[in-house]
Length: 227
Length: 264
Image 1 (cartoon, rainbow over the protein chains, first blue to last red):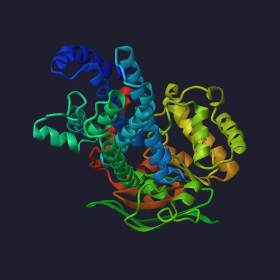
Image 2: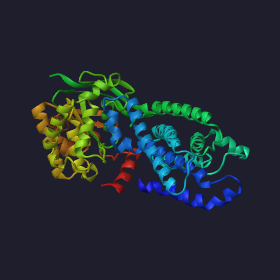
Image 3: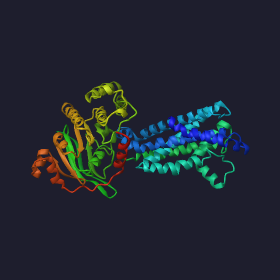
Image 4: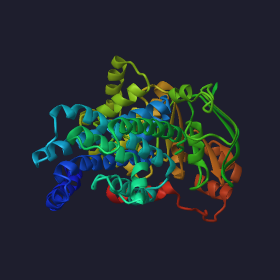
């Protein structure tokens, strides 16, 4: 757990303090406040996708095989695994949130934390389901590297986690709009620092529907796993 | 004697490759039966079909009166399985692994506890019940999987290459447990192996499988007589020929090799 906190922490401190004065000068306010929701999103997406992907390994060498042969519905197995993975990812997000508080992150209202954790869980669920779906389709750990570099990294970097979504060149703006993580981070920003871009309602709608879609797809492909 | 496993004209194709080619056999209840064959013969594929993990391309399978394709859950309650690769949860203790299995198979709590204790004592793991499985050796893990596979008192226990990678003492121990079980409870034992002497010593009947086909079925003595040889190994070579099998490394093999680098 501690190891996986190192990267978000590094990003937070290096970028937060590094770009702090530039951001302030550009009239956007406190970069650390802006960045923290992005870093929370980062820890969630990475943890969530990874736990979904563990299926690739688990199904040959792990406990998953035992569950596949047990008289239990595949749907229940998939839901259990996804909820479990999402819970772990959410907790990572919460820990990163507390660490950012220590380093100077200042939410507008403390009450915002409760709905924020809800959003974190939704995002975690979305990406754990996505990870489960991808892992159900892959056979080999080689695909894992590909997915990390060509899917997860772009999803993170182009989601507005690190930069504001206002006044983006149109290509980037379009990509950000297509990225579910953008809406998650945007919702966190709206709740924590009153600094949303798409609007909380839209964020919630998009997150909710994409999560349902991925859950459905995830369970569809999970049912088809053959060892 | 009732046949607890019936397989008729079973075929399994993976795209163009025919892994299992029109095999038929039946196993009476309480028998110790072995599938003997070289790598790539179709042993693991057959076991996977019998244990609901794969669907047949054509043919019928009946396990304890159930159809694994259409009634997987009832079929699953009838058997326990010990896979070639461990399927335990390494981050839990031996006891906890037993508990989860009991919950998955709907074994009521009090029966679960009583049987877990009996079975762990049976495989000599009772004093390690609160140790994490990741600390166990390969042999201990195998013994735990046997104990776990029997928790729901299945009528059949499947073992896929169960002694691969184990030292002789552990191998001997393992078969002693299983034979005692077969004698006292009448549990049918179906195992696959490519170790001749294991099949010879342990199995009551053997099916020799090669290139997806069953080449011969019978007791060790019958097979030797049929091929006019003196040892099961010679009988086997006579039935399957001496050419080395063309094998391709599949995904599982590669992962297994990687697994060995990082774990025991």
